[in-house]
Length: 106
Image 1 (cartoon, helix red, strand yellow):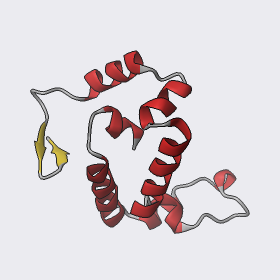
Image 2 (image 1 turned 90 degrees about the vertical axis):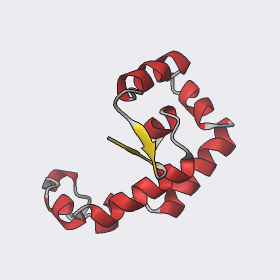
Image 3 (image 1 turned 60 degrees about the horizontal axis):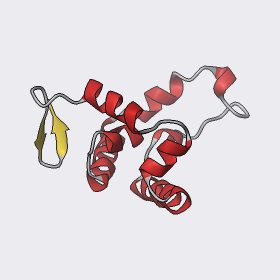
Image 4 (image 1 turned 120 degrees about the vertical axis):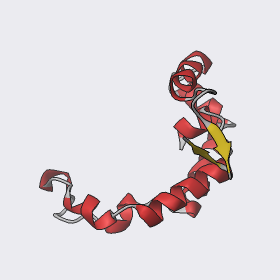
């Protein structure tokens, strides 16, 4: 979520993108691939691999309320504007990406 934010993707587009991933990912296969030593009490709930829209909104609201903004949080953890610019420049190229239907598409 924070990486997409750094790349100037609108928050509601981020939520829609995560929701689409929830529909398309094989969560049972992901669960089966987790080594036993990462499992708490031998079990991991399948929904641990989902990014539900309300959870994303709750995290966004929490961060914004506590740090003033996503940028405020990133600054607090040492990921300042110069680091964010380097990340964005390494991920987004105007020549390679275009904005279609609210999602980044190649």
